[in-house]
Length: 209
Image 1 (cartoon, rainbow, N blue to C red):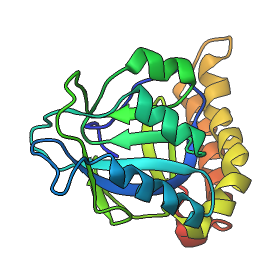
Image 2: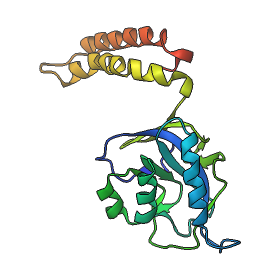
Image 3: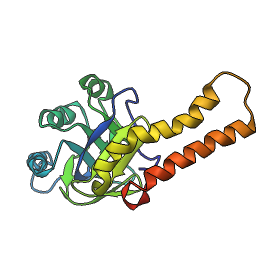
Image 4: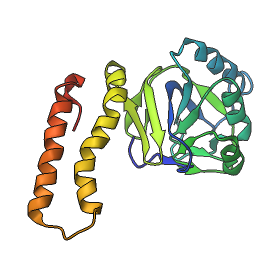
């Protein structure tokens, strides 16, 4: 996701889970009663996901009118197994949510409550420049949120340490003691490139860059 979506708690461990998608609106009253009733319907979809849910909201109001979530919603999601929340809109009760250890990624901070409506549950959403579909595998940390293609998810776990080992050729050189030379730096770069070439041959679709 692009820079529109920011990590609220960079000190927390990484968030990994499967997208539970929905739209959000707060600029008008919900037809047929309160919008919180649809929260139950959203919770029911968790059972169909292959692993822990990550809630992903597209705020349909432009600009955002009210917070997508607060302490009560995050507590509810966490109680039903969710491991984090992403919204293109805003959030509130950030200190309380932090104390829960529940990662959130937001487009803004808003104190307003508004007329809370959860819409289009399970449909694809557009958040932070990325189209997210129900069940997509997401990873979020201090650097932001990314989607991991399911077809290479197992490979990512297998080669992650090897990728870090490849980077170590350069990192060990530039952070080590002694005078630096362009020639030695170039040699470290060559070792790094050679290690990456070996990884590319093993990972589907050549996604190691």
